[in-house]
Structures are given as structure tokens and as C-alpha cells.
Amino acid sequence: MAPSPMPQLDPSKLKAFSNAAAGHDGVLSDPSGELLIKPCVDAEINFYQETLAKHPDFAELMPTYMGTLSLGAPKVPSDAHKPELSQQEKDQARLHGVKIASETAIVLENLEHGFKCPNVLDLKLGSVLYDPATTEPEKAARLDKVSQESTSGSLNFRVAGMKVWSPTKQDFDIYDKFYGRKFSAENVSEAYETFFAALFSSDIKGDDAVQLLETILAE
Image (cartoon, rainbow, N blue to C red; front, side, top):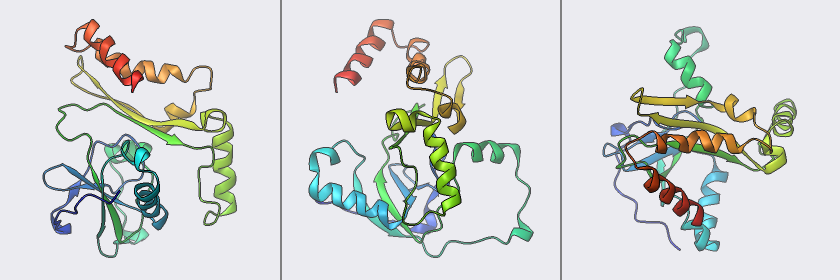
């Protein structure tokens, strides 16, 4: 399976993508909102390319991969001139990791495009939360502890963040990475109940919501 055709993109016209539930900061989108441009390391590029080449059935479950885009050298601000963060920026930092300092980004289909208020659930897969070849021992030990004390260790996945639309508030309820760390193998289903509860408090009829959930489970 080959990557989908790469559209012509002008890096100067990209805009910040604001509806991610977790992950690293610095994700961009094209002006139409149809594409995501995600700064990345070589391992992530290799993952998409190898999946397309060797695991086409699995690739069908992923956002469409279109290739890479050069963003140019990232700007590194001086610590002496960093402005004080606003409360909104501090809240954003709880949702996202630091921006990846990379000149290269992968270009992906934006699965949220076309939805008015898309609910987003971000899962971190696997029990090892770092690259053993490149991670400092101190950070590796800290992430091993996170894995052991969360469902990353017991179930090989963890809820990394959620954005759930509230029809009552007419705004998103935000669940950060610390929310997902509190669950165990016995009660992690509560996170999914919270995520899908919005279906039953929206304009969707109860029977339609149940049918939608059954369809998701069947697939």
C-alpha cells in the first residue's frame, strides 16, 4: 500500500491545531482543516511507512498518511525572554507534552474534519513509555514508575486525555493526562462511560445512541 498523494502545502499558511486531547504541542493544520501536520521524529515516520508496506490491513484503521513536510529549523526561544504563561497556556500544558524540536512533520488526514463538536479520546498504547535507545536513565525511571502505577503497566494502554462536548455548558469538558493515570484495570471502564455519556445528554435519541455504541463495538 502506497501513501496517498501529497497535496501542495505552504508551511507559512499552516495554523495551530487546537482540538487535540493529548500528545505533544505544536501540531498544525492546513487552512481547510482537512489535514494535520505533526512534527515528529524518524521513528514515527518509519512506523507509518512500514505499516503501509507490511501491514495494509492495520493501515486501514489509521488516519490516511500522505508523507512528510519540511517545516524548517524550529525556533528555540531564549529562557531569559520567555513570557509568563497565561492560565489558558498553563491549562494547555497539562494536556500536551512539549513541542518536538524537529524540522520534519508527517501529514495525516484529520479525522475530526467535518464535525461541529468532535469528542476526542487519546489513548497511549504500550507499557514502555519511551525509546530505550535515546532516553536518559532518570527520565526512563520516572516513566517506568508511571507505567507501573497506571493501566499502562496492567493493560498496555492508558487514557492520555479526553475532550467531551457538554450540551449543557455548550463547551468541552477537559480531562488531562492526570485524569487517566488514576484508573486501574478494575475501574478504567469509568473513563469510557464518561466519554460516551454525552451521547445520552445530547439531541441523539436513546435508541440511536445505543445503536451507535453497538456499531462501534462491532467494528
